[in-house]
Image 1: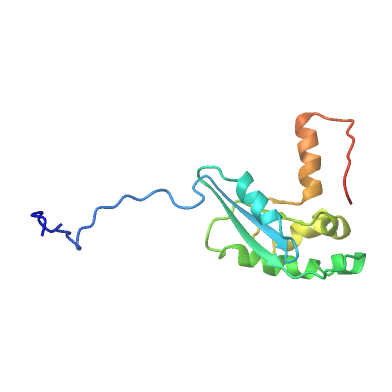
Image 2 (image 1 turned 30 degrees about the horizontal axis):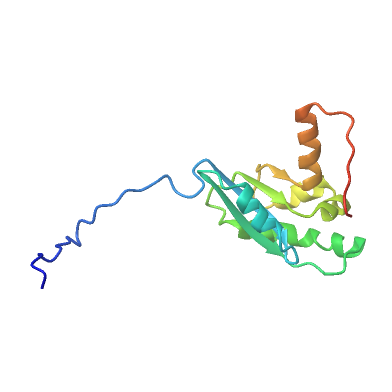
Length: 148
């Protein structure tokens, strides 16, 4: 022995400190395609903000992208929204992460389906978010270059 006394720990009264929990400022949910390998990682980096939590539910999608396979995503939106977090837990917004799917289904449809399990929650999609950002910035003439 080195002459030191053993450390006494009172297991009945361990000191602790709590924080406000995950997502104290905001809890953002996303519906991500099963074949999307980048969105979740990129959003986690982008949303690395103190007090902001990011939750994901994946939906199955066909690897072949056609108007029919994109339209088939519609039936997956409500169940995926339900899986993001239990309904008794706060969720501040939901983002549907498929630009082409939202264009085929329409933002109103995406919003309606997401709200089946989360009434009143703000819902967005890539195109809707882009349009709102352009409005907020007061931009009227925009050029877009995309690999699609």
